[in-house]
Length: 278
Image (cartoon, rainbow, N blue to C red):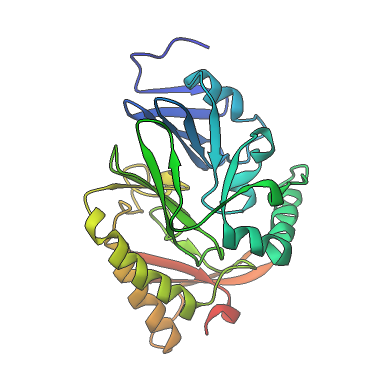
């Protein structure tokens, strides 16, 4: 691969790589999936893998020559398809618990529906995370904030060194949050998560949020918004309005055969099935 020591953005096959700090890279694939590589003094951490046919492992190995671990924001197909290529994988304990109940099946069906080969993942061998977990990379520590909703064990990873929040799909990526899928929590449960996030993220308001599909938001998408803490109270208000029947969907469509509804308030957007309104 070409030496990109002085480049800010470059492309390798289906991946676009952007150096967003001297030691952190954003990697976007042509499917609109966003992954992030945090390079520490002793090891690196890749956040999510995407689902492109070309494995992301050779890309990150070219960026970092030492050991590379994987941390998953949540267990969905488009975030974990290549996790079998990594020997050390971190996943929240509630996600591991939910794997046998529903998430494993959702991942398998999503892979087939997307035209990919279904894989068998040894999730029981993953390293279980809690809100107290710390992942050491040598010169920096990555911490964990629980954000259940999109899945039961969704998390946000915090890098205090570069003031970055890796959000996964917890509150969307600058357009709307998907809360319609099997395994998503109901709105009442999600509202509790939003209340907790508003308190936990208040001291981190100057941190940059990086979503699991970052090009859905500005500056990449003129119809999107910049992902930041302002979305959280708007999302909470929107959930309350939906639960009380005070708002109506602005769009309905089928996602993977399910009839879903898009609601909006302020900067918040949420896509639901009717059975999640409780």
